[in-house]
Amino acid sequence: MDDVIVVGAGPTGVMLANELALHGVKVTIFDRDIEPNMTVRSMGLHARSIEIMEMRGLLARLLPQGTKYPTDGFFAGIRTSEPVELDTTHPYTLAIPQSLVEEALRERATEQRIEIRRGVEAIGVTQDDAGVDVELSDGTTLRAAWVIGCDGGRSAVRRLLDINFPGESARRQWILGEAEVTTPHDEVMAVIQRVHQTHRGFGAGPVCDGVYRIVVPAAEVADEGAPPPTLDDLRTQLTAYAGTDFGVHSPRWLSRFGDATRLAEHYRVGRVLIAGDAAHVHPPQGGQGLNLGMQDAFNLGWKLAATIAGWAPKGLLDTYESERHPVAEEVLTLTRAQAELQSPEPGAQSVKTLFAEVMEFPGVHVHLLGKITSLGLRYAVGDGSDLLGRRQRDLTFASGGSLYPLLHSGRGTLVDQTGALSVEGWTGRVDVVTEESDELAAPAVLLRPDGHIVWVGTDETGLHEALEQWFGPAADRPGGLAS
Image 1 (cartoon, one colour):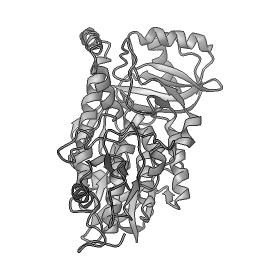
Image 2 (spheres, rainbow, N blue to C red; image 1 turned 60 degrees about the vertical axis):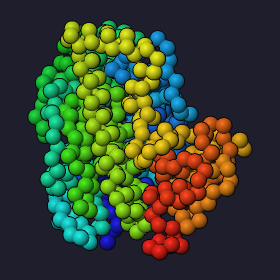
Image 3 (cartoon, rainbow, N blue to C red; image 1 turned 90 degrees about the vertical axis):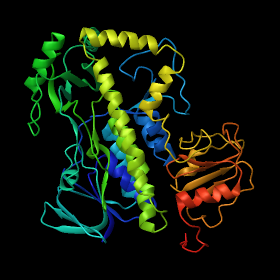
Image 4 (cartoon, rainbow, N blue to C red; image 1 turned 45 degrees about the vertical axis):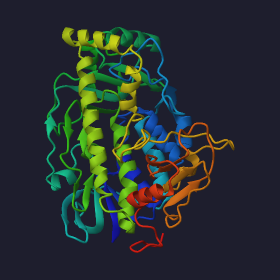
């Protein structure tokens, strides 16, 4: 019996499986697609996701395949007169196809001996106090201690759990795809610039060798389960909005996406949880979908692994929902607002003009980008220092090294500039870094495996209380487990 079955081999599912395997959890991934989905719905990693990739040693695989762009303009396409300075060593958006991100995650999964079984989907889920039985479409039934649904906005796992998914159905849809064009590049870009002045949901950009990634508003909202759009559909809509179809031909793939906005009421039912698009869907404005799902996985992985290992303190796994549900709720608010501001209607454009003026005030643009990138995220982990609950940015040490390469293990980390603190009893769960850095605004901080700060100071009693709160009883104390 596996420890965990993950349903869905997209970026959220594979990211989660990698995090679990990092802690020795036996995990298998199931996906209904026979081959990896090459549809490129996302084209960018935000700063926090880039940090996460560096924290797990994956960023070096991705940087050569992407292009760095300024983060300015990610809120409703509004650009301010002054560039924004973000508090990160990666103050940019990495433009990279989602398929390449998924490929890097799958490579890591292979290195960790994680099996991905394709061409099967979950059609039944039953559970008891000891585990979960998953009925698969190939006629087999497998059992695991835990099951995670990472199977997208139409999640079978969510439906089987009967989790309510309230929100709004799509009011608008777009056609998205990759295809070749015959129109010269300069002419294509000139038309896009002209149309962009009134229609932000229209665009095209070169991918390679005459192939362009194209997005254009659809003529109507198609029913759920409708077949993919055709080349004629794409040509018709391009002509309607641009006055030309650019001589588009030979599509690699075509799909639709809409602005449906929904949030699951719960992320967990017993031994079954959901993450990524299975838990939340929203308009594409701000490019947050891929990033939000991967960050769900980063939050959940170590908590579930701790629960399986037996050292998780009471209630730790529940903090996955209590921390990530409000984040998704805020993302829905942000994307709804941006969708309204990008409407071509005169009223919306007037609001957008006023909003652009407000964003010129000091701190406003940084505040909004902090929400979009998740750099400004603060979990409710306790009272005290303003650092508590925030993610720890990478640090450059006086010795010349940096923090993030030391976090590849996925364990907790005490960064101790005093050299006087001890994590005895938790050494199998928490590493100690006794380096000094001018960039750390505290004598010592305790980091969870996801890099968020849960203790600040010099008091060893307070440190041990935080260690017990987040990493369970010490191994040499009553109730403690061997690390």
